[in-house]
Structure formats: C-alpha cells, structure tokens
Image 1 (cartoon, rainbow, N blue to C red):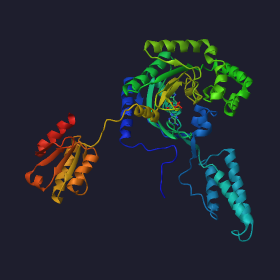
Image 2: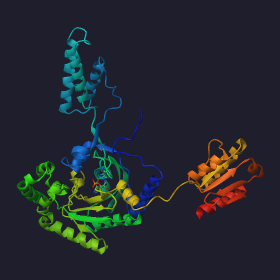
Image 3: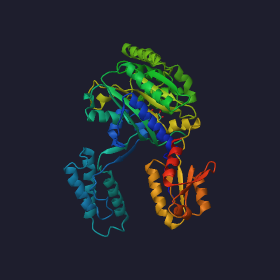
Image 4: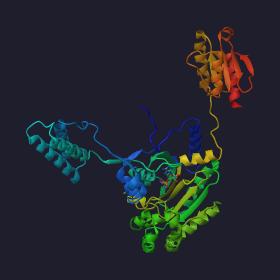
Length: 499
Ligand code: HAM
C-alpha cells in the first residue's frame, strides 16, 4: 500500500520551507516593533466556540469545519457482537455521574440501546443464523454509535475566535493598554482544493483588543500589515476597504437589501436565492457572472450607515491618508464571517489566479461580549494566508537564500573517521553546516555528491593528511585547493562563511 497526503493538504519541503521561515521571521520582527506578542493557541476547540463566533449560516460553520467527538480516554473500545453488556453498563454509570454528556437526547439514546439489548437477550435460540437477529444487532450498533461520548471538537478554521476565548479566559482585559497578539499556524477548512486553496492552510494573524475603537487603531493595524508586506517585498498588493455598519444601522440595511433581493430573486442562482433569507449580505460576495449586473443595482451600505459609523469610517480614511496608505473602496466587501462590524478590509496580491486574497480582516467589537467577556472590550485584526503569500512571492521570482551545506567532509580510511567526527563537531559548534558521510565513499563519488548537495567546500581527510596532521580543502566553485592545519582550516572556513 502506498500512502499519500490526503486531498487538499500538502508537505512543505526544503528549500521552500526556508522561505516560509524567512517570512515568518519577518512577521515576528515587524509585529514586535508595533508592540505585539505571540500567542500560541490550541489547534482544536469546542465546535460551539466557532459556531457562535463565526455564525451558523456561514460557509465555514455550515459546511467546512472538521469536527469530531471527544470521549473519555478510559472508555472500552466499542465492542463487537456479544460483548455489548459491559459496555452498556459502563455508559449507564458514566451518564449518571456526568462523565459523558447528560442532555436529554443522550439519555434517550442510551435508554433505546438498553431496550434493544434487553429485547435481544430475551429471545431464545441461536442468534448468529437468524436474519432478523442480524438486523437487530446492526440496529444496536447504530444506537451504540449514536450515544454521544463527549463534546464536539473542531479543528480550528481560523484563530480570531480562539484569541477572543483566550482573552476572556485569562482576564486579559485587566492588562494595561491594548492587548496586542499575533499567531501563526495551520487552519482547517473543508473547501474544494485548487491553487491557493487548501484544506490545511496556514495563517499569520494579529489581533488588537481593548476598550477603544478609535479608527487610528484600525489604521495602525493596516499600516503594520503593509509594513510587513514591504519588508518581504511583496509586489502588487492592493488594499480594499469597506465599512459594514454596526448593530444600530446594519439590521435596517439588511432588511432593505432583503426586500430588494426578493424583487429580483428569479434572476439569481440557487445559492444566492437561499441567502436572501439566511444571510443576504453574502449575496454581495457572489462571483457568478450572471448575477453581477443585478448586484450592482442593489442598495449600498455606505448610504445606510448611522452617524457614528459614518464618522468612524471617514476618520479611518483620514488616518490612512495621514499614513500615506493607498486603498480602494469596495462596497461589496462584507467578508465571510459574521463577527465583523464597521471596518472590513482585504488585500489581494498578484500571481494567484482566482484565489488572490492574501489577507482579510476587520473590526469585531461585539465578539468579546458574544463569547461571554466584558462588553467594553473591542477588537480588530487580520489574518494573512501564508500559502498564498508564499505563492505570490515565488511567482515574482523570490526564493529562499540558499541555506545549503557549507562543508562536505570526505574521509578515506577507517582510522581517519574519528578525526573527521571531531572536526565536524568543532565546525558545527562554530555554526558551519557540515555533511559527514556515515560510511566511507569512493573519492570520485564523494566529491560528486558534495557538488550535488550544493556544498561550498569539500574537506578531504585521507591517510596522507592524517599522517601530516593536515586537511585538504577544496573550494568547489573554482577548484581552488590548499592544505591546512586544523587551526588554519577553522579560521579559513569561518572567514569564508562570514564573507
Ligand atoms: P479569512 O478571510 O477567512 O479571515 O481568512 C484570511 C486569509 O486566509 C484569506 O484571505 C486567505 O488568504 C487565507 N485562507 C482562507 N482560507 C484558505 C484556504 N482554504 N486555503 C488557503 N488560504 C486560505 C479570517 O480567517 C479571520 N480570522 C481574519 C481576521 C482576524 N479578522 C479579524 N481578525
């Protein structure tokens, strides 16, 4: 059997991984200059956290989450035919003492299972041959599997919900000033894989939480993002900006939008038709060519913002101008997650095809309260899709500065090996990357391998060198070759490395 990475997930190999490290290191450095510290978050959380924060009607929650049921680790393995009695007894005890979820549905499932088992036991005769009995066993299996053994957990589809959960859990609102956090790591969404879209993808994100919602904060978050993109020399980034109002003005706008959408319902596809009732804002996100003309005529939120939101948006634009940040307004930028209010933004980059958004973000002032934290805490942040960012850099010709090995240490004759091991260690202690063959190689083969590995130098240690307490060092680029003592060799290689 041959194993392969599953659809939509992939390996990131050297030397490409070196570019990832450089990009992540640049993010760390730039974000630190804005006062952000790293938060390391769990990869899985209760499913309910994401359902609440992101919204049940969103694509992410309704169809893209990877969820599974947790279970007490002492639970016996689900039994096979004939062993279900002790398993049921264990479930009964654990339901009574709350080790497994005690909700009414679960109680009912267990009662049904017990009933089915009692009926089965009560019947006389040989059960392994009767078809009706086989069906009864199968049904018991279904009932057994229906009993919930623990809470639903989800591989995180994004990290803002987790950051807010952590902010509340650790009472971070009592910390002085704004709480500024960044994170990087894998996220999981069951999307249709294509270029720039994966089921395990990576984000670099940042969140600012605190009592103020001043637009200068929004502008500074965007400034930081662009400073990072400038640092890594991302070409062709365009910033799109919008304001989607708040809980005062958005509901009325959504109603207005819904009304207008109902009038043109028959000109829309099935997805948009459904969204008229469930989430009309998402219709604005549609990329279907045949819907574009209809959407362009819909009412725009900018004309329905309340005074406070309009002033917030106007001040944000002044703050961006003050920082010399260019942007394009896009009234249809509503974003796919429900927690946003007021500011939303996205950045696109070149070389990515249809999945060209490298970053999305916005303000989410109600989220801390929604998840059970203080109503006074506001938030804004963004997440960069690292896979797409790297793709865009690569398309523009960037590659990691080669981190190949410095020295290939070729040894010939068993008695030279201990000296080679000692020399390799001394070089590595000084930061020189050394490749030391584990078994003796033929001279020609070892030099050809050194070449193919991209080594800059070959150090040759044969019986002759051993006797003379010297090493031959060959610069592979031009064949320059010299014989040096250990001290001189170390000095020579360190100097070459620094150059
Ligand atoms: P998002 O727009 O869902 O926002 O994702 C942010 C970025 O992650 C996208 O712009 C894209 O670059 C990348 N991304 C999303 N899905 C995939 C995928 N399947 N494959 C590759 N890349 C992908 C959020 O996640 C919010 N939490 C951002 C945020 C933080 N808002 C406020 N704070």
